[in-house]
Image (cartoon, rainbow, N blue to C red):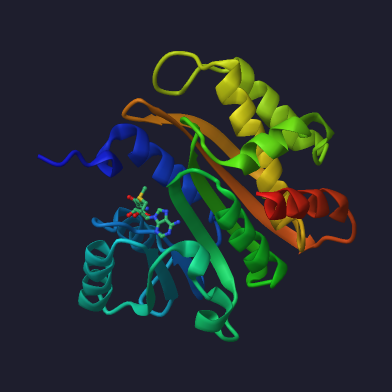
Length: 252
Ligand SMILES: C[S@@+](CC[C@H](N)C(=O)[O-])C[C@H]1O[C@@H](n2cnc3c(N)ncnc32)[C@H](O)[C@@H]1O
């Protein structure tokens, strides 16, 4: 029998938190999701009114069979949008969106933040594909990592964006036990620091970030991190860290 980790209490709680950062009264016009086989996030977002039948939803999925299930779900529910079948980092999001701007995105990767994904994120944020007050949430695995980017960034960690709020949130995480499960090691804390630093560099190319939530959870035995940000007005400065991240990405 296939175990469905997207149905675990930890995942349900994190999904709900990731969606509830959107606190606007009306549904967004454009959204991005990684709904997977059961489309739990789409169902919950519809229920909460974050999206509705008029929202243009871009759903991304690399597994062809799962992508077809998502397509059928969207068709059956009269949803408008596009299912991109392939790896996210090959997704020509700007082309798919045309003149639309993303109001909410749940990048529920639950995997490694590797260099090609970081490059894609940097590109879509640099292209200004988001509304100025968009909400975005991410999940990543904090498990064993093979990617060079994390090592590169971890080296310069303490010289990172130096954003006091992010530092404080991360520091407090360091002393907080997992929401579910036993405490976590310095190594895992370091990985979470590196992920936030990379995102800061990728998103900060164009937007000012307001870190809203950062939570650890577990998917089976794998430690995960969920974090959400509110995007604010265009960033005027602070490009240095983005440039350093771009250099680290291109080295990997
Ligand atoms: C954790 S599941 C999503 C669960 C869903 N969002 C929910 O709330 O239950 C992640 C899904 O995204 C897909 N995925 C992860 N990383 C991807 C990538 N880089 N490109 C395309 N699809 C990806 C996986 O195949 C999987 O189906």
